Structure formats: structure tokens, C-alpha cells
Image (cartoon, rainbow over all chains, first blue to last red):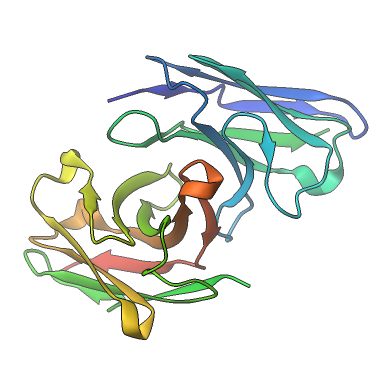
Length: 106
Length: 121
């Protein structure tokens, strides 16, 4: 299986820029997607195919990368962005998720 | 507007079969490129893709669950189904269904609210 590795947690101040990384154990082309999940809610798609903003998602969110290294950037961070962020690949079978990065605001 | 909603038993006993229904609107599972996927999440833990079914009837299961999974659809009634046989406590989780489309890079672009399933004797 393709293992997706994310840092467990990050803490940033509102107004700052934050980058959340996801490293794949093997290439996933550009088929990397990013989700935001707040406590008690279902995940929400933010970015699909590495760099495409999902419908209704603020332009503060952006994605980059290809192959094995991907990044989700939030700039500027707002208080409402407190959540866990998951990456997910759909290039290799089975589709897999990263363990999630919990973003906390200082 | 795409919406999805899961329904299921809530609690069931070990060794029994879990049957879940995903009722959706805003798209048709007979339209090219449309699919429904099932994903689960144990409380406080990460996400695991389970299975997907596509407009053409093709299905894909996560091999980690071996042959325990069956996914199907009722196109006329806008529903998709997941069966998990021989459940045990490790299957306790919130189960989500999600719209999956070729147009969004095979991502899960719309999610249901999830249904909590507890396996307990």
C-alpha cells in the first residue's frame, strides 16, 4: 500500500502562513487530494489533483507538488482553520489517507 | 446540489453482517464518471477507504478487508449499499459515503454526515 506521511501537529498564529506536508512512499502522479475535518464533522474536500481548489473553498487554501511530495498551504491562517487536515491519494490501489495533521492556532 | 446520507443499524453483534445504505441526490449513478465510495473512521483515528462503485457497475474494494466487503447500487432509487460480513470490534467506526467523480480527480468531493456503527456483544 502507498503510505502517506504527515506531521502530527502544527501550531500557528492567525494571519501567518502555514504549510502542511504529505510525503508518499511511492509516486502518485498528481492524484493527491486534501481534506479538512473539524471535530464532530465529516471531512471536506479542499484541494483535488494536487493544486485544484474545490468548489466554494477560499483562495487562502492552495496546493502544490507532484510525484511523492505535496504541500497544502493556508495563507493567511484564520481562527476558523483549526482542524485536522488529511491528504489522500487515488493513483495506486488501494486508495490511502495520511494520518492527518492537527492544526492549532496560538 | 449534491447531498448524501448514510443509514445503518447503529449497533450489532460480532460475527454478524453490517448493512449500510447511502441515499443521495444531486447526481445519478447511471451518469458517466459518477461513483459512490465508502470510507470509515474509528473514533479519534484516521480515515480508511473501503470500497467504491461506479456508474458502469464496476466495484473496487480495499484488499485489507479481503472478501468481507460487498458494494452495490440501486440507480432507480439513488441509493448505494455496503455490506461487511463477519464484523468484530475492530469494525466499530463512523462510516461515511461520499460522491466520487472522474471530474474531480477521483477525489471524495461530497460527503455524508456519517453513521456511527458499534460492534459489541
